[in-house]
Image 1 (cartoon, rainbow, N blue to C red):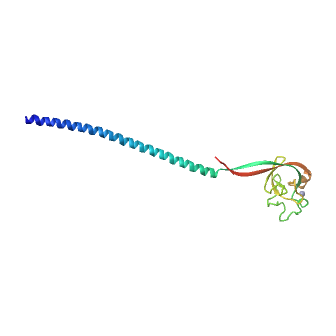
Image 2: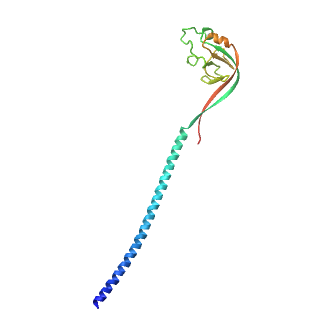
Length: 184
Ligand SMILES: [Zn+2]
C-alpha cells in the first residue's frame, strides 16, 4: 500500500514538476520574446540615431559648402561710342625718350603691350578694367593727358602703326565682375 501510495505520490510529483517545467518553458519563451523585442527596439533606435547623426553631418557640410560657394558674375555693359586714338611708347606719343626710367611703362606700372594696353579716363573707365573695343578685349591700364571723357588710346608697338590707326569711332563695353554667394 505504502509502495503504491509512494509511487503514486512520485508520479503526481513528477507530473507536477513536468507541468512546472512546461510553465517555465512558456515563461522563458515569453521572456526571450520580450528580450528580442527590446533588442530590436534598441537596434531600431540606434539605426534612427545613426540616421539622425549622419543627417546632421550632411547639414553641416552643406553649410560649409554654402559658405565656400562664391560665384563671380561678369556683366558686359555697353558704354557707347568712344573716340579712339592710338599711341606707342615714343617721345612724340608719351613725352618719354628711349632710356627714360618709365619708358614703355603704363600709369599702372605694367609694360605697355600691344593687343592688351589701352589708355582711358579713369573717371569713365576704372583702371584695371577689362574693356572690349569693337569686341576685342583690352585692359584699361594707362592714362593720358588728352584722354578725357569718352576717349580711349590704343597702344601700338610702333609709331607707324599708331599713325595708321589715326582716330576712329569705336564701340566700347566694360566687364563688370561681382562676386556673389550662392544660396542653395
Ligand atoms: Zn609714338
